[in-house]
Length: 158
Image (cartoon, rainbow, N blue to C red; front, side, top):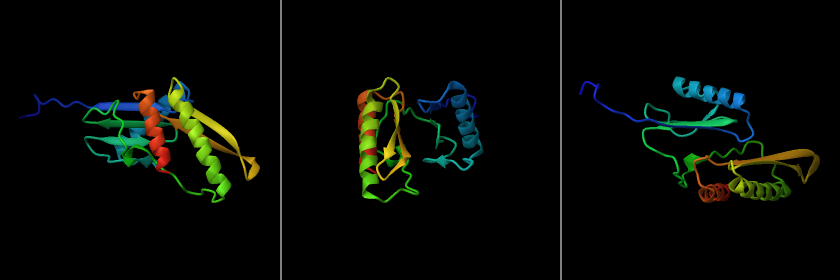
């Protein structure tokens, strides 16, 4: 085949954090696209493979994914679907208890919200001048039930 009759379908998905305005969202997606095209990541976290048929990139404010197969409405309990960051975590027991409670609260709110997003600050139990922020968000293609299941699974892996 000389390639003129071949047909390739590319499935793509981009989503920004639920609290981002349209302009910042567009800028984040453009940055993610440029990083995927160049293959560099520009100091960001690239999750999964980045090759000619698929790529995923997660930035602070957005994510971008493309693949040669459909992945929408496709929740699976793969570690490739979430990112755990543990640098500089406070080791005080109160901190761990507070974080777990915050995450349970924010995941419940995210799964119930129309845009499957929730972000909350809370005063740290060990220092009243420190705020701890938690955020949970699901792909907008997921049902509320799949969102809740995904977030509960992610929390169980922490």
